Length: 455
Image 1 (tube, rainbow, N blue to C red):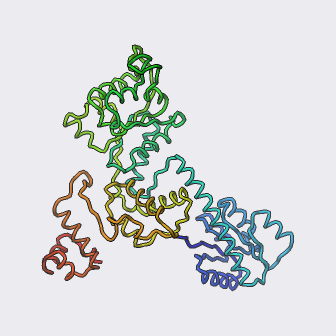
Image 2 (spheres, rainbow, N blue to C red):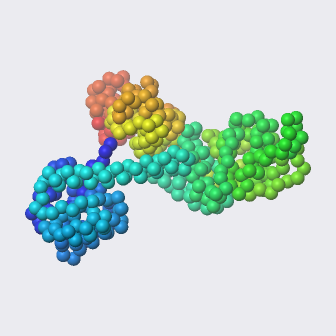
Image 3 (tube, rainbow, N blue to C red):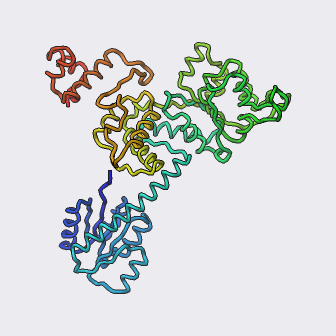
Protein backbone atom coordinates (compact mmCIF):
# COMPACT_ATOMS: atom_id res chain seq x y z
CA UNK A 1 0.00 0.00 0.00
CA UNK A 2 3.07 2.29 -0.30
CA UNK A 3 2.01 5.33 -2.33
CA UNK A 4 4.01 6.54 -5.32
CA UNK A 5 6.21 9.50 -4.40
CA UNK A 6 5.35 12.83 -6.05
CA UNK A 7 8.31 14.87 -7.30
CA UNK A 8 8.55 18.42 -8.66
CA UNK A 9 11.54 19.10 -10.93
CA UNK A 10 12.39 22.73 -11.79
CA UNK A 11 15.10 23.78 -14.25
CA UNK A 12 15.02 26.63 -16.77
CA UNK A 13 17.23 24.62 -19.17
CA UNK A 14 14.91 22.45 -21.30
CA UNK A 15 17.45 19.69 -21.99
CA UNK A 16 18.48 19.34 -18.34
CA UNK A 17 14.80 19.35 -17.25
CA UNK A 18 13.76 16.71 -19.79
CA UNK A 19 16.69 14.43 -18.97
CA UNK A 20 16.12 14.55 -15.21
CA UNK A 21 12.35 14.14 -15.57
CA UNK A 22 12.82 11.13 -17.86
CA UNK A 23 15.30 9.45 -15.49
CA UNK A 24 13.09 9.92 -12.42
CA UNK A 25 9.95 8.71 -14.20
CA UNK A 26 11.84 5.54 -15.15
CA UNK A 27 12.54 5.07 -11.43
CA UNK A 28 8.76 4.87 -10.90
CA UNK A 29 8.11 8.32 -9.44
CA UNK A 30 5.18 10.61 -10.24
CA UNK A 31 7.09 13.55 -11.73
CA UNK A 32 5.93 17.06 -12.59
CA UNK A 33 8.46 19.16 -14.50
CA UNK A 34 8.58 22.87 -15.31
CA UNK A 35 11.10 25.43 -16.65
CA UNK A 36 9.31 28.32 -14.95
CA UNK A 37 10.00 29.43 -11.38
CA UNK A 38 6.60 31.18 -11.04
CA UNK A 39 4.82 28.09 -12.40
CA UNK A 40 6.76 25.90 -9.94
CA UNK A 41 5.64 28.21 -7.14
CA UNK A 42 2.03 27.73 -8.25
CA UNK A 43 2.47 23.93 -8.28
CA UNK A 44 3.83 24.05 -4.73
CA UNK A 45 0.96 26.21 -3.51
CA UNK A 46 -1.62 23.93 -5.13
CA UNK A 47 -0.50 20.68 -3.50
CA UNK A 48 2.15 18.82 -1.53
CA UNK A 49 5.11 16.98 -3.07
CA UNK A 50 7.35 14.44 -1.39
CA UNK A 51 10.43 16.01 -2.96
CA UNK A 52 11.33 19.16 -4.90
CA UNK A 53 14.46 19.24 -7.08
CA UNK A 54 15.19 22.78 -8.24
CA UNK A 55 17.86 24.69 -10.09
CA UNK A 56 19.32 27.48 -7.97
CA UNK A 57 19.76 30.28 -10.51
CA UNK A 58 16.52 31.15 -12.36
CA UNK A 59 14.81 34.35 -13.44
CA UNK A 60 11.84 35.88 -11.53
CA UNK A 61 11.63 33.08 -8.93
CA UNK A 62 14.89 31.29 -8.06
CA UNK A 63 15.63 28.08 -6.22
CA UNK A 64 16.07 29.73 -2.82
CA UNK A 65 12.61 31.28 -3.04
CA UNK A 66 11.12 27.92 -3.97
CA UNK A 67 12.97 26.27 -1.07
CA UNK A 68 11.72 28.79 1.47
CA UNK A 69 8.12 28.69 0.21
CA UNK A 70 8.11 24.88 0.20
CA UNK A 71 9.31 24.77 3.81
CA UNK A 72 6.71 27.36 4.84
CA UNK A 73 3.85 25.30 3.42
CA UNK A 74 5.14 21.75 3.90
CA UNK A 75 7.97 21.47 6.45
CA UNK A 76 8.32 17.72 5.82
CA UNK A 77 8.85 18.06 2.05
CA UNK A 78 12.51 17.61 1.16
CA UNK A 79 14.26 19.97 -1.31
CA UNK A 80 17.36 19.19 -3.35
CA UNK A 81 19.22 22.17 -4.87
CA UNK A 82 20.93 21.67 -8.25
CA UNK A 83 23.21 24.30 -9.76
CA UNK A 84 25.96 24.84 -12.28
CA UNK A 85 27.29 27.74 -10.21
CA UNK A 86 28.20 25.92 -7.02
CA UNK A 87 29.84 27.95 -4.30
CA UNK A 88 30.45 27.24 -0.64
CA UNK A 89 28.33 30.24 0.39
CA UNK A 90 25.33 29.21 -1.70
CA UNK A 91 25.55 25.65 -0.41
CA UNK A 92 25.68 26.84 3.21
CA UNK A 93 22.73 29.19 2.68
CA UNK A 94 20.68 26.39 1.06
CA UNK A 95 21.39 23.94 3.88
CA UNK A 96 20.60 26.55 6.54
CA UNK A 97 17.26 27.19 4.83
CA UNK A 98 16.36 23.51 5.09
CA UNK A 99 17.62 21.95 1.85
CA UNK A 100 18.19 18.21 2.09
CA UNK A 101 21.13 18.12 -0.34
CA UNK A 102 23.11 20.32 -2.71
CA UNK A 103 24.18 18.87 -6.08
CA UNK A 104 26.61 20.58 -8.44
CA UNK A 105 26.37 20.25 -12.23
CA UNK A 106 27.50 18.22 -14.05
CA UNK A 107 26.20 15.47 -11.78
CA UNK A 108 26.37 11.70 -11.95
CA UNK A 109 23.04 9.95 -12.52
CA UNK A 110 23.75 7.31 -9.89
CA UNK A 111 24.39 10.06 -7.34
CA UNK A 112 21.06 11.72 -8.20
CA UNK A 113 19.15 8.43 -7.97
CA UNK A 114 20.73 7.67 -4.58
CA UNK A 115 20.10 11.13 -3.10
CA UNK A 116 16.52 11.22 -4.41
CA UNK A 117 15.80 7.76 -2.96
CA UNK A 118 17.21 8.74 0.44
CA UNK A 119 15.34 12.07 0.49
CA UNK A 120 12.03 10.35 -0.27
CA UNK A 121 12.67 7.73 2.40
CA UNK A 122 13.28 10.53 4.90
CA UNK A 123 10.08 12.32 3.85
CA UNK A 124 7.98 9.17 4.08
CA UNK A 125 9.49 8.30 7.45
CA UNK A 126 8.49 11.74 8.76
CA UNK A 127 4.96 11.26 7.44
CA UNK A 128 4.78 7.79 8.98
CA UNK A 129 5.89 9.14 12.35
CA UNK A 130 3.24 11.86 12.23
CA UNK A 131 0.61 9.31 11.20
CA UNK A 132 1.57 6.95 14.01
CA UNK A 133 1.48 9.76 16.57
CA UNK A 134 -1.98 10.78 15.36
CA UNK A 135 -3.18 7.20 15.49
CA UNK A 136 -1.77 6.70 18.97
CA UNK A 137 -3.74 9.76 20.10
CA UNK A 138 -6.88 8.28 18.59
CA UNK A 139 -6.27 4.84 20.08
CA UNK A 140 -5.75 6.42 23.52
CA UNK A 141 -9.29 7.74 23.48
CA UNK A 142 -9.45 10.87 21.35
CA UNK A 143 -12.55 10.89 19.16
CA UNK A 144 -12.29 10.50 15.40
CA UNK A 145 -14.93 9.20 13.01
CA UNK A 146 -13.45 7.69 9.85
CA UNK A 147 -15.59 8.46 6.80
CA UNK A 148 -15.55 9.75 3.26
CA UNK A 149 -19.26 9.02 2.73
CA UNK A 150 -21.41 11.99 1.68
CA UNK A 151 -24.30 10.99 3.96
CA UNK A 152 -22.00 10.54 6.95
CA UNK A 153 -20.29 13.88 6.30
CA UNK A 154 -23.70 15.55 6.27
CA UNK A 155 -24.58 13.82 9.55
CA UNK A 156 -21.31 14.97 11.16
CA UNK A 157 -21.93 18.54 9.99
CA UNK A 158 -25.34 18.43 11.68
CA UNK A 159 -23.79 16.89 14.81
CA UNK A 160 -21.19 19.68 14.91
CA UNK A 161 -23.89 22.34 14.67
CA UNK A 162 -25.95 20.73 17.43
CA UNK A 163 -22.84 20.34 19.62
CA UNK A 164 -22.68 24.11 20.06
CA UNK A 165 -26.11 24.09 21.75
CA UNK A 166 -27.32 22.48 24.99
CA UNK A 167 -30.10 20.52 23.28
CA UNK A 168 -30.67 16.90 24.28
CA UNK A 169 -30.06 14.39 21.50
CA UNK A 170 -31.22 10.90 20.53
CA UNK A 171 -28.85 8.84 18.36
CA UNK A 172 -30.45 5.90 16.63
CA UNK A 173 -28.93 3.16 14.52
CA UNK A 174 -28.29 -0.56 14.35
CA UNK A 175 -25.98 -2.22 16.86
CA UNK A 176 -22.36 -1.65 15.97
CA UNK A 177 -22.84 1.53 13.92
CA UNK A 178 -20.97 3.69 16.46
CA UNK A 179 -23.66 5.48 18.47
CA UNK A 180 -21.43 6.04 21.51
CA UNK A 181 -18.61 7.23 19.26
CA UNK A 182 -20.95 9.81 17.72
CA UNK A 183 -22.00 10.89 21.22
CA UNK A 184 -18.32 11.40 22.10
CA UNK A 185 -17.88 13.36 18.86
CA UNK A 186 -20.74 15.71 19.85
CA UNK A 187 -19.38 16.10 23.38
CA UNK A 188 -15.83 16.79 22.15
CA UNK A 189 -17.15 19.54 19.85
CA UNK A 190 -19.20 21.17 22.62
CA UNK A 191 -18.38 23.76 25.28
CA UNK A 192 -18.86 20.97 27.87
CA UNK A 193 -15.83 18.98 26.74
CA UNK A 194 -13.68 20.09 29.70
CA UNK A 195 -16.15 18.55 32.18
CA UNK A 196 -16.15 15.09 30.62
CA UNK A 197 -18.81 12.66 29.39
CA UNK A 198 -20.15 9.81 31.54
CA UNK A 199 -21.89 6.77 30.05
CA UNK A 200 -24.28 4.08 31.22
CA UNK A 201 -26.02 1.18 29.47
CA UNK A 202 -29.62 1.23 30.68
CA UNK A 203 -30.14 -2.39 29.69
CA UNK A 204 -27.51 -3.76 32.08
CA UNK A 205 -29.24 -2.86 35.37
CA UNK A 206 -32.59 -3.67 36.95
CA UNK A 207 -34.79 -0.75 38.02
CA UNK A 208 -33.41 -0.35 41.56
CA UNK A 209 -29.77 -0.59 40.51
CA UNK A 210 -30.27 1.80 37.59
CA UNK A 211 -31.94 4.32 39.91
CA UNK A 212 -29.00 4.07 42.30
CA UNK A 213 -26.45 4.42 39.47
CA UNK A 214 -28.18 7.48 37.99
CA UNK A 215 -29.33 9.32 41.08
CA UNK A 216 -27.04 8.11 43.87
CA UNK A 217 -28.14 7.58 47.49
CA UNK A 218 -27.95 9.07 50.97
CA UNK A 219 -26.29 7.33 53.90
CA UNK A 220 -28.70 4.78 55.39
CA UNK A 221 -31.04 4.84 52.37
CA UNK A 222 -30.98 1.03 52.33
CA UNK A 223 -29.08 -1.85 53.89
CA UNK A 224 -25.43 -1.45 52.97
CA UNK A 225 -25.64 2.29 52.21
CA UNK A 226 -22.92 3.23 54.70
CA UNK A 227 -22.03 6.53 53.07
CA UNK A 228 -23.38 9.16 50.67
CA UNK A 229 -22.88 8.25 47.01
CA UNK A 230 -23.34 10.65 44.12
CA UNK A 231 -25.15 9.33 41.04
CA UNK A 232 -24.02 9.74 37.44
CA UNK A 233 -26.49 12.59 36.81
CA UNK A 234 -24.96 14.59 39.65
CA UNK A 235 -21.40 13.65 38.68
CA UNK A 236 -22.01 14.75 35.09
CA UNK A 237 -22.94 18.29 36.18
CA UNK A 238 -21.55 20.73 33.62
CA UNK A 239 -20.86 17.91 31.20
CA UNK A 240 -22.67 15.21 29.21
CA UNK A 241 -24.44 12.00 30.25
CA UNK A 242 -24.79 9.29 27.61
CA UNK A 243 -27.73 6.92 28.13
CA UNK A 244 -27.20 3.87 25.92
CA UNK A 245 -30.20 1.65 25.08
CA UNK A 246 -32.63 4.08 26.69
CA UNK A 247 -35.63 2.04 25.51
CA UNK A 248 -34.66 -0.63 28.07
CA UNK A 249 -35.71 1.71 30.91
CA UNK A 250 -38.75 0.61 32.89
CA UNK A 251 -41.85 2.89 32.90
CA UNK A 252 -41.09 3.93 36.50
CA UNK A 253 -37.51 4.91 35.58
CA UNK A 254 -38.79 6.86 32.59
CA UNK A 255 -40.95 8.94 34.97
CA UNK A 256 -37.94 9.66 37.20
CA UNK A 257 -35.79 10.66 34.24
CA UNK A 258 -38.55 12.88 32.88
CA UNK A 259 -38.64 14.82 36.14
CA UNK A 260 -34.86 15.35 36.00
CA UNK A 261 -35.14 16.69 32.46
CA UNK A 262 -38.08 18.96 33.28
CA UNK A 263 -36.88 20.38 36.58
CA UNK A 264 -33.10 20.20 35.95
CA UNK A 265 -32.64 18.77 39.41
CA UNK A 266 -32.06 15.36 40.99
CA UNK A 267 -32.88 13.78 44.33
CA UNK A 268 -30.71 10.98 45.70
CA UNK A 269 -32.35 7.74 46.78
CA UNK A 270 -33.38 8.16 50.43
CA UNK A 271 -32.92 11.93 50.27
CA UNK A 272 -35.39 14.77 50.77
CA UNK A 273 -33.50 17.62 49.15
CA UNK A 274 -33.14 18.33 45.44
CA UNK A 275 -29.80 19.14 43.81
CA UNK A 276 -29.68 21.47 40.81
CA UNK A 277 -27.84 20.04 37.82
CA UNK A 278 -26.68 21.28 34.42
CA UNK A 279 -26.35 18.20 32.22
CA UNK A 280 -26.76 17.55 28.53
CA UNK A 281 -28.36 14.17 27.87
CA UNK A 282 -27.51 12.12 24.80
CA UNK A 283 -29.53 8.92 24.48
CA UNK A 284 -29.03 6.04 22.07
CA UNK A 285 -31.22 3.22 20.83
CA UNK A 286 -31.19 0.54 18.16
CA UNK A 287 -34.99 0.69 18.01
CA UNK A 288 -37.38 3.12 16.35
CA UNK A 289 -38.21 5.42 19.25
CA UNK A 290 -41.39 6.76 17.64
CA UNK A 291 -42.64 3.19 17.16
CA UNK A 292 -41.86 2.49 20.82
CA UNK A 293 -43.99 5.51 21.78
CA UNK A 294 -46.77 4.35 19.46
CA UNK A 295 -46.82 0.91 21.09
CA UNK A 296 -46.77 2.33 24.62
CA UNK A 297 -43.24 1.17 25.47
CA UNK A 298 -41.80 4.66 25.78
CA UNK A 299 -43.42 7.74 27.31
CA UNK A 300 -44.41 10.39 24.78
CA UNK A 301 -43.59 13.27 27.14
CA UNK A 302 -40.12 11.83 27.76
CA UNK A 303 -39.70 11.36 24.01
CA UNK A 304 -40.27 15.09 23.41
CA UNK A 305 -37.91 16.07 26.25
CA UNK A 306 -35.01 13.85 25.23
CA UNK A 307 -35.49 13.83 21.44
CA UNK A 308 -34.93 17.54 20.78
CA UNK A 309 -32.52 16.60 17.99
CA UNK A 310 -32.42 13.20 16.29
CA UNK A 311 -29.28 11.80 14.61
CA UNK A 312 -29.51 8.52 12.70
CA UNK A 313 -26.40 6.49 11.88
CA UNK A 314 -26.64 4.45 8.67
CA UNK A 315 -25.64 0.76 8.66
CA UNK A 316 -22.25 -0.03 7.14
CA UNK A 317 -24.00 -1.68 4.16
CA UNK A 318 -25.26 1.80 3.20
CA UNK A 319 -21.80 3.38 3.38
CA UNK A 320 -19.70 0.73 1.62
CA UNK A 321 -17.39 3.40 0.22
CA UNK A 322 -16.05 3.77 3.77
CA UNK A 323 -15.02 0.11 4.07
CA UNK A 324 -11.51 0.54 2.54
CA UNK A 325 -10.84 3.56 4.81
CA UNK A 326 -12.03 1.69 7.89
CA UNK A 327 -10.04 -1.40 6.94
CA UNK A 328 -6.82 0.62 6.67
CA UNK A 329 -7.59 2.43 9.92
CA UNK A 330 -8.16 -0.82 11.84
CA UNK A 331 -5.11 -2.47 10.23
CA UNK A 332 -2.96 0.47 11.40
CA UNK A 333 -4.58 0.46 14.84
CA UNK A 334 -4.06 -3.21 15.59
CA UNK A 335 -0.63 -3.30 13.95
CA UNK A 336 0.45 -0.68 16.49
CA UNK A 337 -1.32 -2.27 19.45
CA UNK A 338 0.05 -5.74 18.62
CA UNK A 339 3.50 -4.46 17.64
CA UNK A 340 3.18 -5.80 14.09
CA UNK A 341 3.83 -4.24 10.70
CA UNK A 342 0.98 -5.09 8.32
CA UNK A 343 1.52 -3.23 5.04
CA UNK A 344 -0.95 -4.80 2.62
CA UNK A 345 -4.54 -6.00 2.38
CA UNK A 346 -4.82 -8.05 -0.81
CA UNK A 347 -7.39 -7.07 -3.49
CA UNK A 348 -9.08 -10.46 -3.00
CA UNK A 349 -9.50 -9.77 0.72
CA UNK A 350 -10.86 -6.29 0.08
CA UNK A 351 -13.32 -7.62 -2.49
CA UNK A 352 -14.72 -10.09 0.05
CA UNK A 353 -15.09 -7.32 2.63
CA UNK A 354 -16.72 -4.96 0.12
CA UNK A 355 -19.28 -7.60 -0.88
CA UNK A 356 -20.25 -8.53 2.68
CA UNK A 357 -23.28 -6.89 4.29
CA UNK A 358 -21.86 -6.65 7.85
CA UNK A 359 -24.98 -7.20 9.98
CA UNK A 360 -22.76 -6.28 12.97
CA UNK A 361 -21.72 -3.08 11.17
CA UNK A 362 -18.46 -1.25 11.99
CA UNK A 363 -17.96 -3.26 15.18
CA UNK A 364 -18.02 -6.51 13.17
CA UNK A 365 -15.58 -5.09 10.61
CA UNK A 366 -13.23 -4.04 13.41
CA UNK A 367 -13.38 -7.49 15.00
CA UNK A 368 -12.69 -9.07 11.60
CA UNK A 369 -9.58 -6.94 11.03
CA UNK A 370 -8.37 -7.39 14.61
CA UNK A 371 -8.58 -11.16 14.08
CA UNK A 372 -6.70 -10.89 10.76
CA UNK A 373 -3.87 -8.85 12.28
CA UNK A 374 -3.64 -11.18 15.27
CA UNK A 375 -3.31 -14.27 13.04
CA UNK A 376 -1.01 -12.69 10.42
CA UNK A 377 2.48 -14.14 10.23
CA UNK A 378 3.53 -11.92 7.31
CA UNK A 379 2.94 -8.28 6.40
CA UNK A 380 -0.12 -9.21 4.32
CA UNK A 381 -3.80 -9.71 5.17
CA UNK A 382 -5.09 -12.35 2.75
CA UNK A 383 -8.50 -14.11 2.57
CA UNK A 384 -7.25 -17.03 4.70
CA UNK A 385 -7.10 -14.66 7.68
CA UNK A 386 -10.80 -13.77 7.43
CA UNK A 387 -13.45 -15.70 9.38
CA UNK A 388 -14.42 -18.88 7.58
CA UNK A 389 -18.02 -17.79 6.91
CA UNK A 390 -16.82 -14.70 5.02
CA UNK A 391 -14.49 -16.45 2.60
CA UNK A 392 -15.63 -16.81 -0.97
CA UNK A 393 -19.23 -15.73 -0.44
CA UNK A 394 -21.43 -12.69 -0.12
CA UNK A 395 -23.79 -12.44 2.82
CA UNK A 396 -26.81 -10.24 2.18
CA UNK A 397 -29.32 -9.38 4.87
CA UNK A 398 -32.84 -8.00 4.71
CA UNK A 399 -32.74 -4.49 6.09
CA UNK A 400 -34.65 -1.26 5.68
CA UNK A 401 -33.28 1.29 3.24
CA UNK A 402 -34.47 4.91 3.26
CA UNK A 403 -37.31 3.99 5.61
CA UNK A 404 -38.75 1.02 3.72
CA UNK A 405 -38.23 -2.71 3.44
CA UNK A 406 -37.08 -4.12 0.09
CA UNK A 407 -39.79 -5.46 -2.22
CA UNK A 408 -39.61 -8.80 -4.02
CA UNK A 409 -38.64 -6.90 -7.17
CA UNK A 410 -35.81 -5.21 -5.24
CA UNK A 411 -34.52 -8.57 -4.06
CA UNK A 412 -34.84 -10.17 -7.50
CA UNK A 413 -33.02 -7.27 -9.13
CA UNK A 414 -30.24 -7.46 -6.52
CA UNK A 415 -29.86 -11.23 -6.97
CA UNK A 416 -29.80 -11.12 -10.77
CA UNK A 417 -27.28 -8.27 -10.61
CA UNK A 418 -25.05 -10.39 -8.37
CA UNK A 419 -25.35 -13.48 -10.62
CA UNK A 420 -24.42 -11.44 -13.72
CA UNK A 421 -21.35 -10.10 -11.96
CA UNK A 422 -20.39 -13.59 -10.75
CA UNK A 423 -20.66 -14.95 -14.31
CA UNK A 424 -18.95 -11.86 -15.79
CA UNK A 425 -22.00 -11.16 -17.98
CA UNK A 426 -22.36 -14.71 -19.34
CA UNK A 427 -26.16 -14.85 -19.81
CA UNK A 428 -26.25 -18.54 -20.67
CA UNK A 429 -24.44 -19.48 -17.48
CA UNK A 430 -26.42 -16.88 -15.52
CA UNK A 431 -29.77 -18.23 -16.74
CA UNK A 432 -28.69 -21.76 -15.82
CA UNK A 433 -27.77 -20.69 -12.27
CA UNK A 434 -31.08 -18.81 -11.94
CA UNK A 435 -33.08 -21.79 -13.23
CA UNK A 436 -34.67 -19.85 -16.11
CA UNK A 437 -34.16 -19.73 -19.87
CA UNK A 438 -31.98 -17.15 -21.58
CA UNK A 439 -34.93 -15.19 -23.03
CA UNK A 440 -36.50 -14.83 -19.57
CA UNK A 441 -33.20 -13.57 -18.20
CA UNK A 442 -32.92 -11.09 -21.05
CA UNK A 443 -36.42 -9.74 -20.24
CA UNK A 444 -35.53 -9.32 -16.56
CA UNK A 445 -32.30 -7.51 -17.49
CA UNK A 446 -34.40 -5.08 -19.56
CA UNK A 447 -37.03 -4.77 -16.81
CA UNK A 448 -34.49 -3.88 -14.14
CA UNK A 449 -32.17 -1.88 -16.42
CA UNK A 450 -29.20 -4.13 -15.64
CA UNK A 451 -27.35 -3.84 -18.95
CA UNK A 452 -24.46 -2.06 -17.20
CA UNK A 453 -24.20 -4.77 -14.55
CA UNK A 454 -23.22 -7.60 -16.85
CA UNK A 455 -19.54 -7.58 -16.06
